[in-house]
Length: 524
Image (tube, rainbow, N blue to C red; front, top):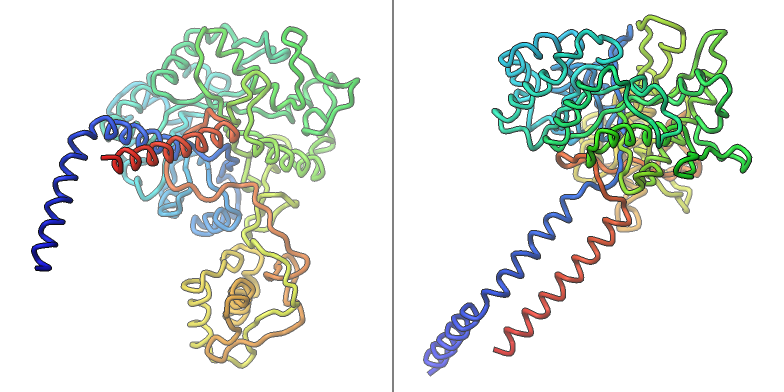
């Protein structure tokens, strides 16, 4: 009897299912459309980023592993290499950090003359490392038009050959090809509305812009307000170069558009957009591949100071992180790479040329900068810290350290090589930091300060120097950098408010369709 009832119900369900799918082609199309829209929404980049240039012209360059440890500890998600160093590319594998590799100026001639050379370069320096290493761009040379103008004729051919090599390797959708140019290619950048490229390079620049447009790439700009200010002979106030607020009498206004410019940085980017528009080409985003401020200079470089460098770079990060574009393109965020990670003491030229770095080789910062804290902490209301015991067994300490940094989900980046809590480089010191980070996060959920008898609590703050233990009243969490990228992310053409609205709108549509679908199916 029971089996008969079940069989009857099963037949009824199957019958209803057939009817449902017979009358549901329209709903299936709607579902498919919604899924596609949802995937598109989720694939949009999560806002503007600030990355770093990594030069290698220094006497005591840290190992590639140590450099990557510094990047990870400070949540740096984008880097530009001035070459395609195999050690760095290997060390960057499986980090999610987006990497821009570079063809050196010395390599351009061969690549621009022979497609096979370009193919070999891509195979050796790109294809050999992806997908483990998240390479997303190739920078072809550095300021080629102004530094080696005789190579201008082969610049675009080199870009084309590299692009074809990427296509052959099925990497063209992930990796974009472009070439960084200095502001010197725009002789009169102010006012931005009348800016135009130097006509000497019109043919090359037009071909380059067509290439960028056709490949959905972006214009790479090296923009230095430091030089713009120094070379202006007092025409512009230093506050304008440093992103500081300007008084009403000093406001910078484009007389043709009446657009207000709060910073020289924005004006330089807008001058580039207007120069591109002069060729009747649009839709090419501008990415700032180099900008910064030197923190030390010679007797005739009085504006190269620690104070100015700290002000510029901190304000730059805040500016880029607000996710908006320059006045003429407010919806296109300005993705930016700071020049540079380390001071390059082997570079020729004035003293300032060797002092642009944010970090010393040991990982400490030249000056305080709001990069986002790797130790994201909150105040410990109980004033209790968890540290390793002095006489603890080393094997048990190692096991406890491994647990705290692994399964315990403690943030142990600060005890990595080159980071603030790495020294003293002892098992007890590292275990204390890891134990405490775990304890502060987990003690309210039942986590204990025991670790197989190797830990104990103390009311004395164990922080020292620049090493701040989680829970210390002097620590704070800041996060101007986004979390590490999970895949290739190109320049975004939408501001955060637009993306938030789009996501919210799609979510409402999605739920509405689901409810309509349920309603229709129930009525059947």
